[in-house]
Length: 640
Image 1 (cartoon, one colour):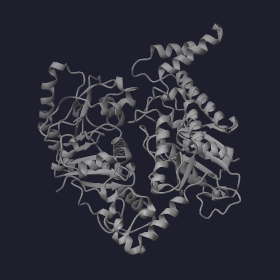
Image 2 (cartoon, one colour; image 1 turned 60 degrees about the vertical axis):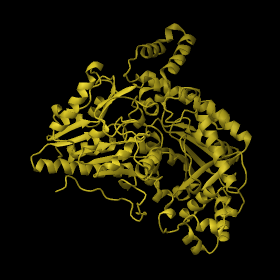
Image 3 (tube, helix red, strand yellow; image 1 turned 90 degrees about the horizontal axis):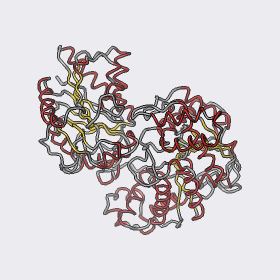
Image 4 (cartoon, helix red, strand yellow; image 1 turned 135 degrees about the vertical axis):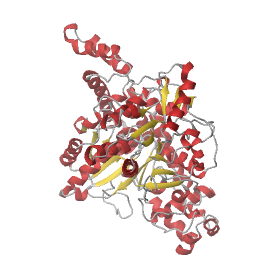
């Protein structure tokens, strides 16, 4: 009898030809759906082992990937009676040196997300000890592997994957025969962890990790990967050759491994990225657009120069046969892209709008621009923001969170000291308290309420400065300070009805014709995703309201990725002056300049990323044979 139930595909109708792929993988619409399925497999294994009066040995991972799995397991324990009394756990790794009490330790992570909420026996929990003396680490690691053997081996091992292709902390160069050991962390791994440590300099340089050999001895392995950031390394791991430079490729040697992916992490796999190279396709308009744009890049030609031979030589002969000729395909595609371009993002008045991305009526629209943090608005659509105001629309910007955790202690201390120096001594108690809190704050201490308030006000006043520069009236600038965010630490609360109600209230008040929202789910801590889900939930609740019949939702991308060309429904060109204006608006957010705390895996400042992204989009349109612009901001319409 198998120890666990097989996972099921969750996107029926997708291309299932997998001849390029060397690992079994399953794809889900969302990380949440995937996590619930993984948790169910773990629960079935635990119950199966209980039915045989056996221990269930789990190998556990940390990081963002398994969090929702642990949440579902906790729910199953609390609501469905799932017991962990027979479970023995071995964690993959731990930073070195690292105390168990440190908020960044994996001991702390596991207690917070799982162990404190279930009935597992404390003596059955095994996590590498980051306080072992360096001289004793080697023997400790040997003992850790022996303890796994004595427990009967790992029945099911959870893994994540890093951008370097590491599993556990087995960095590039790790040997297939490696056991548990101390290892030096790759620089990219430390950059990716920097947000949790308030900077790369604070990330430990070493870690204790299970080795590749230890992991491969597991009876069942599930590797979890969510989001666009993981797409490229997932492709290299699943479709590439086995190499120590991508340690996750060693999993190709394991006969019971499944990669559990959301559709974003799977997006670079050949069957999703270029399915026409795999087999016959159902040629939807979106797939035609994707394929023809890809063909232009592949042949380095503009759309109108593509020939029948280009289509036939690149896996699109069935599309050519269906449409009749390259000429017809090219003209139709050219027109589709041409019709996305508009200098009137709120619709051009008194004009035929049948081939325009936005309606001409009403000519003056009420518009909400939702911004997850107090700078996403200008970073992502500063040029469009300005155009909407100049073209006479009633524009409102709504900042969903305070953004306070992205302000450094040094920046907050500077402002507190200025305020303290400015006001008289008898009125300075508040700022003296803030200064004291910041100067005495320990490594793992959460900011006091006063410090959080000051940091939030810094972000708020920067936002006012930027929106005033663009031309927005102060009364049209709104701050929601959604409760889910206000924890004072990186870990946020789940989205709650209170958050949704606050978002719904501002929509009901303004009754917009257009809503712009951040559709970028790649931010390091998931705030964008929570903020977007709050908007979706609020708009769903309000859908019965009559004003919602005339409300369109447009999604912009943030500081990490741009929409692919075939996804773009509205492309707003920017002039050189508008690009410069956008840069200046971003620079008003001074606390986020030079020392960005949560910049993800991109070392460029936000204004540089924004300009490069917008100019690259314009170049892609130019390369396809359309008009040449300085820069373009891109949007995708979403039917909620």
